[in-house]
Image 1 (cartoon, one colour):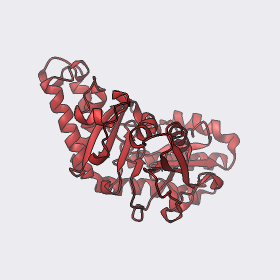
Image 2 (cartoon, rainbow, N blue to C red; image 1 turned 135 degrees about the vertical axis):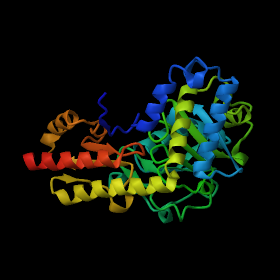
Image 3 (cartoon, rainbow, N blue to C red; image 1 turned 180 degrees about the vertical axis):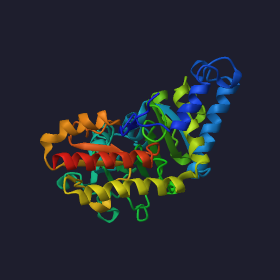
Length: 360
């Protein structure tokens, strides 16, 4: 078997150790004679799997008892609708949104269907290359919540300093940065994240929500209500059992490998060496403001974009997969999530150097 280096933005790389353990359990989970994909979600065995995964996630992020943790199908994009549907009273209710990239734009579009959206800050004029500082946000006095995408996957832009966030109901899309480093959950009313970047397979989102935001809204469809999931331990219907199970394996892997503080050190090291090479190369460039650069998603351009297709084909031949930038912006992008090793980043830099020497 030949494993290659996967830099996909999502579905992304999974830890090799986790996949290896999965291989041994796939056909026969712990001697029970069936796969977790075949288990009843009501069975004693799966309930234990689900509860353990949830507790490991809570342990990693040090989530307090003031919050509920939910496992919901539909990925983060469903949350673009669920957040305003659950938190707004009616179409006249005001909510603040930060316009900081393509995923913010999609969230704003959905929120406008349910309430009065105020754009509290935007980096559109900076081509989404610089994250607006919290001091510049113009929040509405009667806003029900403020929504922000902490890490914009496409443009590789991140809000790095969370120390001066406003004291309001902050709702954070953390899909592409969750579990990459410690996070002070207490600063937020809701945190949500799609699984397919740092957590597990696609199709699942994990929501951390303050219990006092769980509202009983009779006119809301049951499957769109956070309270439904909280009241049923996220098992109102059949949940995405395999994604939940495999996510739990990833949580265990993180706990067994130094937790989130160790992961932060590793991730910062990977990002630093890649950005440093790009900046010094003279052949590649990253045009994101230095103080807004993501440590998860590193977009870069070649000085001569006519070489883009050659770069992508030769990098794939070298075992470096999924380096193409998002279709909306082009160029290249290396997503270096938790499961992408330093060895993988070193291999990428070596290839970039060799490509530059041949084509510079």
